[in-house]
Image (cartoon, rainbow, N blue to C red):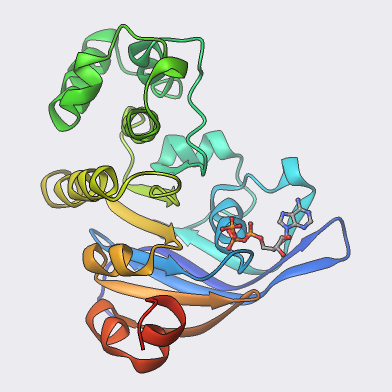
Length: 248
Ligand code: ATP
């Protein structure tokens, strides 16, 4: 008690198409200001968990059929994705999803769509995003579709920041990127966490990298949390090493 929890997922079950049971009672917590990793192989249920939180399952014919989700002390599992964004919880989807035919800057500005404060405040935050991602400033007039995978991932994160989130659900930021770029992106996540107090729930197959930056981790297997603990403990654990870190 007394610990400040920004997100609490309590025993959720998710079913697709009324019959396909994919999450079988997942519980997890993100402390305010924390970076928490959600780990597991292909198809373990990481993306489904993030989409359940941000309420993006409906488009996939998925539904949370049991359990509850609390964000900043409020029950949010019946809220629209936009309401959640307005309250400070936003997902950066796997595969980056920038608008290819818009410039980087136009993409970033779309991230401010739920805001009701003025253009000046939005402009100020755009500068802030460029401060964190100097590469995006350099490329601000380029069509996103013509930028590199790493730049598009940065653009997707930058766009999310434009909504002034308290919690970012980040789905496999490392996917398809060179290790050096992945490192660069994780360093920025770390900085955002430290300087802006943005909390992160980070779904990753790159266990090694995720556990370097997260303070706590959950491991999912076929829709269940099979292990959780401090990042250091998980990195030292023999089973984690054998099954997820590629060393034994
Ligand atoms: P990945 O790294 O591939 O994204 P993941 O851990 O994020 O893996 P999910 O994408 O959440 O896993 O998928 C979990 C399970 O749910 C998989 O077995 C997948 O086939 C199934 N699934 C995902 N989306 C749907 C859908 N729209 N309809 C039916 N089944 C789905």
